[in-house]
Image 1 (cartoon, one colour):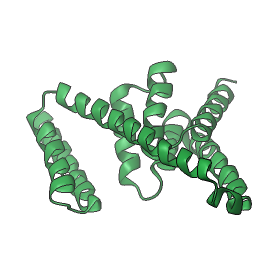
Image 2 (cartoon, rainbow, N blue to C red; image 1 turned 120 degrees about the vertical axis):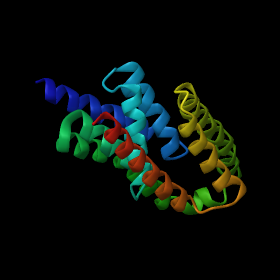
Image 3 (cartoon, one colour; image 1 turned 135 degrees about the horizontal axis):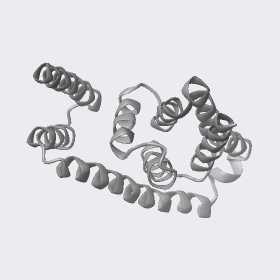
Length: 186
């Protein structure tokens, strides 16, 4: 019964987040954190950051990847499958409806202005995610973590290094850091 309850709550939560969130995966990431960490207390905050890092490093849409790792963490393979279905269903239905009425939407002034205005809201939510996640890194008071974060920012924003290169480099640094920490404990 409890597993069914978790799967149902996971389905409803991810379906709701996917259906009513505009702006892509980084917006959903924030809302997933609020839902599963702050509201339901199913996942610890540090663990959620780790899951999102895994989701970001995997190929594909971050919203779906985030749902997969959270679903898997909460209920194994069935949780991942439920989360995938719930996360992909609303965009599938919405895009199908929009494609059916595309000609009407394409030239509608109100719709085009509405979508342009939503971009500002999306930018604000993404800035909030960066502020929250960056703040947690700074609060750890790890000079290395802050240095990596600033170097990644500079590489992407100032030097225009490909984001994939930065992500792969950070993955390598994270693995190296974990290996060195394991050696110190041993």
